[in-house]
Length: 137
Image 1: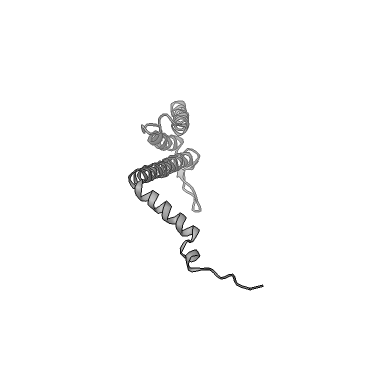
Image 2: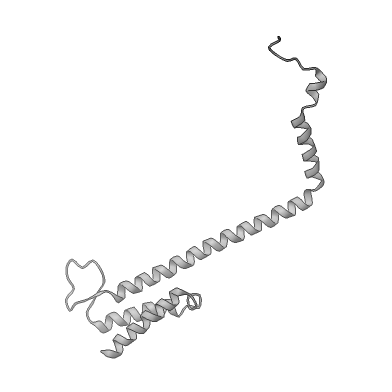
């Protein structure tokens, strides 16, 4: 029994994979315009989805950052004298603190791109709380 099967030259010329590849290449060449158009459309869709996702991430990040800054002001300490080891914000009076918080929350709630979002609702709620504190004093 021979160890290696010998191929004839005729058999070597007709590799099934190569024949399949040549048929597919010819088919692609015949339909290159629709294929190119489809690839352009898919690329545009992918770029649109990616851009929208990045834009939404940036939008939520800035809204959360602005709300966090306003919340820090809203919860800041009030002291007549500034402590030496103060790590956060400190205000001299409640009125000064709530005016600063009101301004910070207004920066979020008055923007047109936050108005109809949960961030805008939360900012308007805290803005109203600041106004209540200011009217009470």
